[in-house]
Length: 387
Image 1 (cartoon, rainbow, N blue to C red):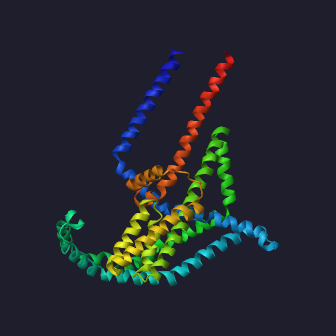
Image 2: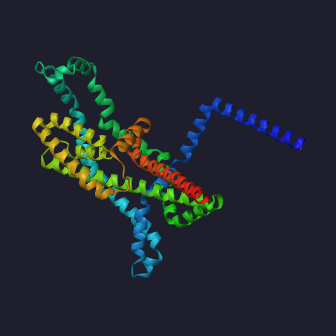
Image 3: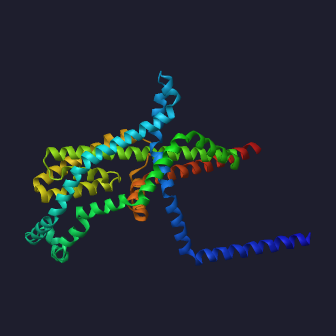
């Protein structure tokens, strides 16, 4: 008995020493380990992108498959899955073709024109600040230092190097022409197609693994959170993209009617910023108004501000709730917290995805609180019954 205790004691200390050495080595070679993981993830990038693409196209494929399944033609019912995947990718290709041939040229022209005119707007901004009347708001915000800082900028060189459409175009051509990028894109599409075609088998396989590894209670909990997570993220991401597209198109049409210069680009910009709750709408509209001040004057900028604010209010109170529904049920405080925290640690993507993450954490916390309260109530009832 004593030998057995000694053996367990030595085994414990041996395991502890091995763990300590492993932790030390991990910390000592932390940079190398991070680089190795980064290289490994780079290799897996097309597979990860394939999973993301398949995830985004899953619902359209599923709905089309159900449509084909309800058809009276046996050919369509028998090949419903393959046809649904083929139809979705054809729609995606048609959308890309329309964007590349009609939307991109218009945007490119506006961006090029805007880039070429930035030095003029820069000069006008300096002149406006220098000529600001005594006691105006611009004097109160110390415009002298601002003017000096603007003068110290070599705006022509900045525009030439950073905003030049020719430079951006050459960068894009270089990236798209790289063999590695083409290979990654091809693998991504192939992986996504196979995932969509074999999604039923993959889901069944993962379900069987979870059942084999986890007990019934844990499995049901994991399954429940998986369904909630999937519902929250898919509904939020898809609805926000649709909402941003609608707002962008509406604002672009309004700007075109008002004959505002760069209306398509500014409308698209407002729509993209609208993806970020609260802050995105404010920043997008403010930037559009500032650009319109220089391209169309104060009157147009004022009307643009009024109209876009009305559109944003309609979107926030009518369009967005109808598209998104009540799936998140978050208070404004939690939304702002999610956007701020996500933006601080993960940038623009974090600002966009911070809201559904907070919504999921809220569900987990509330479920756990309800479980604890239920356990306490059951214990109280048990004690009362025993007495």
